[in-house]
Image (tube, rainbow, N blue to C red):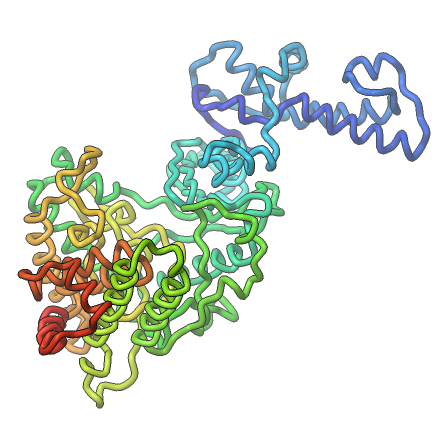
Length: 570
């Protein structure tokens, strides 16, 4: 078995499976065979495990299995007891009898507590535990085993001796949806193991499995056909039935640091901070524009009959790995409930969303506090209906001879924590492709990254009260203009037929308007920003309410449409 190197301080002993539980497994085996054979056991055997009388021979066999299975845990306790602070070369097969005696004499309930049952996670008062279950407490040893199973085997040194590759646990990070563990092999190569928050027990559904399959196949396709810098997929398993026990994706660990760190770090590289920031934006535009090579006929997810064949566009699977608890009602839905049918028109796609929201709001009428609130709902519906008339590829903005609308891929969460760069700001890759799908071109790869257009978000504030880094309104304007220029340069270098750059300058508006549809608070806030541009003199809340209650006043719709046409023109 390959050796492993770990810092003793990295061991989390409480996460290991307890010997007490392993003995209980042996006892279960004993009782099962007792029922079948009617055997009796010696009191010594019974007292050794604290179990009821059973078959002594079978018990001894079971305990041998327990001992073999406990040897890895033995090494952890041995290190902790001896206080060895050096890197420790571990061969679990060679655990000594002294070490076994040490583990047996220790209180297993204190050193190796049994993991909580799934029921305890589901009923926990801690929201994090209800969402993540046992995912955040997967033992480090499990990640090491998984990495070594799918990693390099080793090589021969100069003397002809075979040298096995070893693995070291580096660090672990969790976001809203996934737990990511970084493992480094002794040859210097690093991998990232991604485990979804819902990857446990009945929280993991067929829809999640298919969504992971789509993500992996789409990433491979993008890398092969477009050369987009994204991590190589090394191995993956969308089931709960592997030895690891949870769904996972093992991928190449990209070098560098995320833009959210590099943007404010002037201690590295050979440039001033402003030059570094400009290079970050230039490099992002040059690399993400490689997605121009891929074009599709519908909005939806990519489906592959075989991984190396051209995909077809099918339904999106509307699941999130984390973000919120999964209720019993949610988990009991049929697979088809999670499917969003593909659409050949972005107008149809967004108008169906808007209509669905409006009908749901009307159905919720008894819960609304007043007629003013219902008028607000109707007003937002009417205004967004007009706004969609001036989105790209609508009847009012598209030439009749332009041909059918086409769609593109884009990072689902195109933000600075998911863009990796080196010390000088050169992009090393884009990460986090959960829920990747085709999108309208005006919401595609040519749009500005989210950190550049956050000043149009409904929850934007500056300076931030929580102390987190953020761009000022002036910085947003400055860097949005720079990125627009860099994207135009990148597209022109690809050829005159690549015209997607024309969407970049308006992505802060169109992206937020499209994102807002279906959420009352976001829709109202985004409308206020639009009205700031086309009707800064009006009382916005009254304007929205009056349109919903009384309709358009004389001439009001005409100047509103004229303002929207100018504002959203690409």
